Length: 176
Image (cartoon, rainbow, N blue to C red):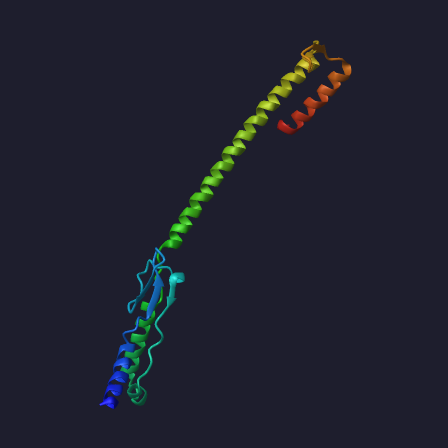
């Protein structure tokens, strides 16, 4: 009796081996999922950590020669199994490309806005420098207020320094 129980146990354990889960992956929450069916197409390939092994031939299959029709059926079955086991494109690449395109457009708009702002500032600085240069060239007395709040009239050296400063502003900001 003990021998028949051992044989039954061996046969039963061999039969149950085919029921072992062949696929294993983690879901969105990080839980491990085990199944004999492949995961859905929205599961990325990097989260699948176990795939089914290739089908093994039984001793009967090894001994019987394949006819042409059997070989064609076997190839069709193998290609169908390979197609089922390969991950399907999920469209995440399209979403990523779309997000990247939107980000690039936003950055381009930001650069354009910044360039317009800088060009407006330069145009304003240029106009102010030209007006100050006209005033300086007119020969009218120009007075500035110093750090103590006193009014000072520009002498010839100060006028020359101011003219040089205005020229450098016009050279950098005006499109001449």
